[in-house]
Every structure is written in structure tokens, then in C-alpha cells.
Image 1 (cartoon, rainbow, N blue to C red):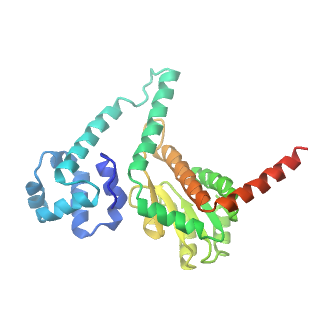
Image 2: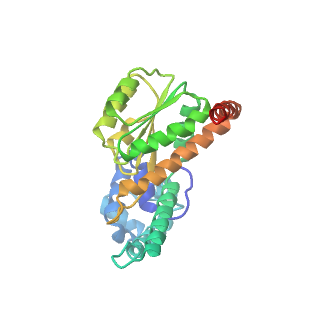
Length: 285
């Protein structure tokens, strides 16, 4: 795994959890469930408690991007302190309009920063390669994620690659049944447990079509079924659900994928954009 920015220990663990071996998952679960005990324990104490070798704990810390156990402890302690601070940034009944706006902007910024911290460079490259090589790209999402799917279609149509976006579950299944392994589908679901989306994933996967999922960092059926999973990180508050804040990260992933694909298909994108501008200009005459 690439060396990540300092901090976000728990986010890193959740982002890579599905790839851990059995003993690594034991360590991961202990850190996530008992962070306070970790920051007050030595590597020897943790190893003894979990009945694993110290070297196993050390390699786990390296695996999630830290130089060693001490560096992981420092990051975890910082994350716990940050969590306390964030409580005081929640919206209060007496907040005025400007204060609420400031808190929302800060929360949105935190969502993007936290998501950026868990991006896996290898997974991002795999996703871009799938899209660049696709004959056709379709975007599926329900509810709020359906809006993100439409935004993706609005952007990717400029690449010259045939695209479509569907938020209706029946249309998703109908369209998925017509795709081939030369195509690609991007599934967008915050929870990763949406029944309709998972049905579409099964149809697409059975046909050998490359799949990308944009979903929450927590382990989910969607992240386990798609070829490439891109994770968002967000926090829920009283006045804003976790799913609502994650939409900003989903949109940012779409932007990043679009720009990456556009750079690799520069001439095609320029030609396609020119044709669209000419078509729109004619309607204004």
C-alpha cells in the first residue's frame, strides 16, 4: 500500500479491511473497537492480548501506511482528539444563519479531506483504465445517488464515449442485460446495500462486464462484488445524514475519473466537445 498522509488511522483500516488476512482482521477489529486501549498500550501488550507476534502487529501498521506501531498510535490519538473537537462543531439550536453556513462548509471540507486520505492509488488507476477501455459506460444509482449518476453522464458525454445514467431499477436491469464485456458500469450507492443496485450488479457481473463501485468506506455487499471499489468517508449529524454529506465525495470521485479519462483521450474529448458546442450554438440562432 502507498504511504498515506498522516492521520485517519481508522479510515485507512476500514478502506483496506476486505483485503486483510485473518490475523490482520483480528488486529484491525481490536483497534477499531478499543482505540483508547491501543494508545495506552505497548506493541508487546497488544500482541499478547491478541495472541499474535509483535512482528505481525508491526507489519500491520506498515500495511496501513505507517512507519511503525508508534506512528500508528500517534495518528490514532490525534484522531480521537479530533473527534472530541468535532462534537463542538455540530449545529446548535441558537446558531445564526452565518454560523450554520460556516459549520456546513467545514463539515463538507472534512468529508472531502477524509475521503482523499483513504484513496488507494492502485484502485484509482484500475478504475480509470476500465473507463478508458470501455466501448460504453453506464452509471447506476438510486435516490440521491441517482442524481450523482446523472451528473456523471452529463460530464462523461463530453468524452465521446457513449454513456447513459439510470436511477430507475427496472431500466437499470433492462439496460444491463444488453451490455457486453466491452462495456463498463459504475454503481453509486452510499450504503452499498441497496437491493436494486445489487440485483443490477449481479446481472452485470454474470456477463463479465467490468464494474466500479463508489460507496461508503464500511464493508458492504457492493464493495465486495464490484471489480474496483472507491470509498467515501463522511459523518452523520443531527441535521445532515451521512448519505447526504457523502454525495460531495461521490461527485468529487466522478470529477476525478472524468478528468483522468479526458487526459488520456484528449483528442477525442476535444473533438466531441467541439461538436457539442456547435450543436448548442445552432439552437441559439
